[in-house]
Length: 319
Image (cartoon, rainbow, N blue to C red; front, side, top):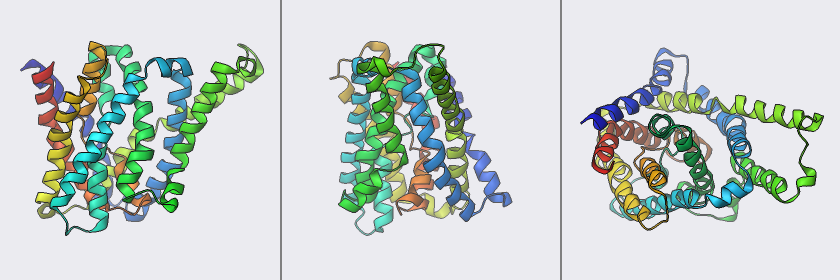
């Protein structure tokens, strides 16, 4: 019971951050045009620096390779969600194309960083955060590959060009920097040199700019939720999506994790990630990829409300 109550409080506190965007939309501080503009700013100018700073500032290329099981585990979760989403869509052939693509996308990925971060920090400390961050590498790659297929309905040449967006460019650039640091040490700036100071300053700027990712994502999600009509939320389509994201996909993912060589502490962190609700950032992606924003906002609302019960339930059962 103690585990359940503690986890309930942690999840509720994080979910309340969405309330700021909800109130801003209701009071008129944010409108539809402003929310879309905010989504574009997040995707093009805030999120990419956060990705780059997280990878380059936290790891060497060798550390990423040595911790391969954590990125792989998140890719496995995405593949399971993708398969479940594709299967469940067969029961809703009459929904619009934008709704179906967002349904598939929401089944495919979870809130794999922002939501579990404070929970993991509280339970496992900085070591747990390091493990979570390693998994983040696989999650980011999966978003811009498997996730793109889900939200666009395929990967034509036209959609493949969309995959080469600023977040994906940030990942590729970070990998290039890590590779250079690992295999071309002559190009690494020496400690105390002007070049090292410049690099540290640039990385610090990326961290500062990227620090807005969580807050802005929450504002966008809350703003989109403020326009939802209650009678449209509790439909079989949306309830099925919530059940997939909070129950079916986590159950299958937790089972699949048993077959990966993950240390006990790392396995618990991976299981926590599998339990998480829908991605907050999907509200921003709906505008960028012409998917249904109402489905995104409804999924965020239902899964975050549902996670108040399902995440503590999973923790009580497994930990």
